[in-house]
Length: 169
Image 1: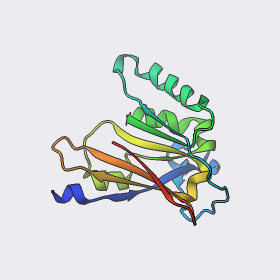
Image 2: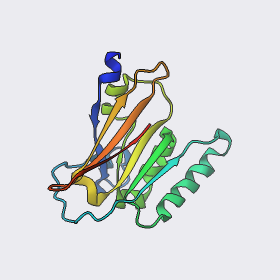
Image 3: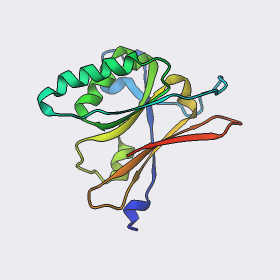
């Protein structure tokens, strides 16, 4: 296995800071990993969605997917596959996403280091309910393939509880 395939890297989750209203690039800041968790975990609901479709209807599809994702009741984690930068921008600009979710940013420095500035134009990401913010950890793990494949992993670790993790890739 190449060294590239062994380098699992921790990546940040980001939450919206309302003090930066209108400044989308500044408003999303890394989550404080030491936030207290006060709910008892009874269950976690996960949804996964493949975002990318065809450039011909891309904007319409992105807006429709966003509305559909926001309408899902009682979802704790959304795993998105084949996210483009334009879809990430739409997500991050949405006020409901800003107020309710923390997100991974598949083009942030942590991903770039792990993926060695990969030129893959779509990536995978997670949206996590804010209540999980202090307990959620994400990482990206490049796989030893010629196609530049990788796995993004999300782990929810609650004090005195077992660890639950998901991967998309």
